[in-house]
Structure formats: C-alpha cells, structure tokens
Length: 280
Image: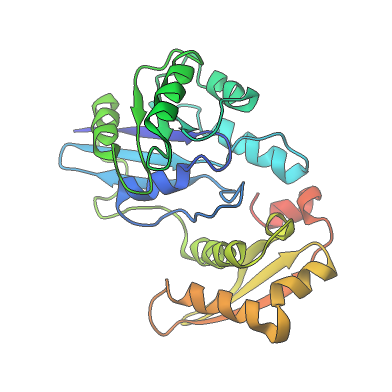
C-alpha cells in the first residue's frame, strides 16, 4: 500500500478546484469564474486498492490587498509543507506572468509536477507555447496538459501522481472522499451560488457561515461589508437571495430547510478578529 499528500497550487482561476473535483469524480470544492473562490484548504481523498492520495486544494496565490488576502496566501504556502508532491497548475490560455513565476518558485526544492490546464479552450499552439514556458519556470519532474472541465489528460496525470506516493498505510477510511465538515460545506454551497448570481466587487465582500444546525433546519448567515451590498445580495423583492437558497438546496439532501440571512459586518476582510470568527 502507498499513501501520501499532494497539494495543488497556482494563481487564482487556473482551475485547481475543478481539477480536484474531476480527479475525485464528485464535487468537494466549490468553483466559480470569480478569482479567490477557494478561501480554505480543502482535502479530497482518492482511494484505490493499492494507493490513497490526499489532495489539498488551496486558495489562489495573488497580490493581497486585504488582511484576508494575505491569510489566503499564507494558507496556500503552508499547505505545501510536509507533502509528498506539489502540483503547480497553470492556465493554458493566459500568458505566463510574474505571479506564475513567483508561485512556481515556491515549489522549488520539492517534488513537483506542472499541470497545464484548460487545453479544451486553448489552441494546440497555445498549449505547446505554455508547456515550453512552463519548462523554463522551475525544475518540474513532469508536465501534463489537461482539461479539468472535460477530463482530458486527467487519468494519465492521476497515474503519475499515484506512482509518486511513498509506501504507507491508509490515512483516511476507504469510503471517505473529503474531511470537510457538513456545516462548512453548506456555507460554501451558499457562497458559490451568490458568486454566480452577483457581480463586480460584491463577491469578494461575501462570507457565509452556518449559525444554527437543527437538522433538517439550517440557518446560514451571509456577511457583506456595506449596506449597498446587502441590497444587491437580497435582490429586488428578495429574488436573488431566494434563487441562491433554491440552488443551494438542490445540492443538499431532500427535505433540508435552508434559511438565509444577510448581515452587514463593515470591512470584515481587514479585521483580524472578524476573520478568525469566520475561520480564516
């Protein structure tokens, strides 16, 4: 038996969460087109008869503008410590920039692979250019062009990851796919729907937390930073909030009663105590 940890790192919006979900064959990490969707490291467990890989999805590393942003970067960097493999994920459709070079440098001195994602929307020439650019970033052991959305190239990547795991016992029960607590998952589902329904700067100012859990009744509190944002999240006659609740419930067991409440918590992204209450 072999087992170990593999951490996914990269800039925001390169598709780390989508890749993790594709590898596991089910959704364990929320996704959206909004940068910095992932705010907490999320573990997903792939178990086969001869190997178990614990993947760690991390926030996209970026230039922080708030205390929250710095904490997200810190959590991503810390998630690389003590793991058996680092997976540096790169967007095939975007030019390699200073941020990509910085993140690739963080993988230096570790066992690492480079994953060039989004080949389903990149041209062959773009993909080849990106693989060439990636080869100049750091000393990665292997390079894999994949599509996290369609699954192209993912089986080959998974086989290579499994081969890198050291000998060891099961780290999690065979039937466990993630160690994410249920309350955290519900709050993340609500935030995912709000990211899809809102726009501009509002998504970055949204935080969600479950404040009451009396199954099947769940109360989820939505925090924003300004009164104007509260109005946007609620929507005209409460329609946007209602839609977020409907979409969230569709991904939960039948019979769940999900209550959503919006609260203004001024500048919570820059207040350490507020971040600690939210688990950041």
